[in-house]
Image (tube, rainbow over all chains, first blue to last red; front, side, top):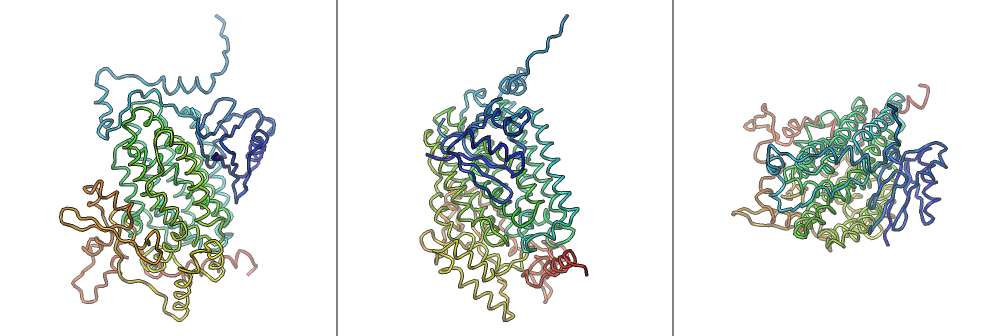
Length: 89
Length: 516
């Protein structure tokens, strides 16, 4: 079993995004580092637009993830509603 | 007629309409004349339409998000500069890592811009062509934002002023330069594996994540902003690299051995370049986030391990040099910094011996190696310096023909023995630092015999200014080389202790924190 991960610049928008990830991925591990936050999940991570919107209180386009994104690992699949990272598709 | 507002297009439809549907098949010219570089590397592609960018980013969305990134980045850089942010750094020693960054890394960003513009033009598929176009634009953005951000340091500190001139000349800068020249002079598929996959996916996290987090930790918001902003583009680049590898492997079984050899080669080439990053992390950051070894374990062993486990379904194995690289993690940064300490007169940044506190940290992070192999060396040099004999090596080192790094790496299983390898080619002997570099040379000797090796070039008399006169009795070859490097002796080089940078930083910081 391998981890996929995603890291963001640590700011107010990312705080909501990370909260949404943790809510949707119960096996997530959050690792705070200077100026950044890294989230690891075994095998697959799903980031849902609806969960982020709930946390951030406004409409959110998943492509906005690009703005605070630092890095990621795993195969990417992006649709209007979900951004998925996984190993072994 | 009524105009009905239709529903907004979804991401997949938008990507198809605005990227893949813009493709056409040429009829006035043969496809192979339009894309002439597609066959000579031996890679077989049957259906370009199978490639799809998983981010499904269209050009309009690209501009929108990139401009937002730029606005944020320049707001941070302006705020940092406006408030004399450089005086809130932990210590001015840190700035020397930025000098290394500007001279060694930034010019590679520019080369990556050129490289992706070139290969993007070569690919017959609209998907990879557009993704390469975006990456090419990203890379020139990185070069520009790094120059802009670091230009503020150039107003106050030495060693930044001739970065582009030095990139083409200074001995250790031939390491990153020759790495990228090697990639850009290979074919389009090899370039994608070299830079898109091996460098971006497997290795750039080590530079742009823990090191940049370290920049933030040391109070440098400028470097934090350009570093993380660049790495956010890298997420796309890494994804492009991985998709290209999968695409190539899925297209034809004959592609596997070619791709595997490129992965072996480019993992090792990139890993050797990262030697500089290892020492930046362990020795040049006054406050450290994590050791090189920890970064290697997180971003190479865990993440790279997951990647290669995943690619095993295509028959891909971990790169040849992987095992040695994992063994080296206990040694790499210490050996590299020791060499720069030695050659501190010939580099346009300052070096120093680690303090007692630094060494406590290093021995805690490297319990099996630091005290045993490296501490005695640094203590000896510190003692010599204290007695007025700061050691500067005045002879020139032997270089590896492939990676161009001085031959200081030790045998993978014996850290007391320098590794030497050699090959004969057309009656000449060539020297290598490792099995990895030797095997790269042996496969393409006609390419690597052309290497511009700085030490050989100095001995051949090619590294002096036109005014230099070697027939003069007081001719000092090393001083003349520094002139050619456009380095000012005693100001841009030598130990940090006693440097103009140190004096200025301390004086300005006193002004900034008191009412003198």
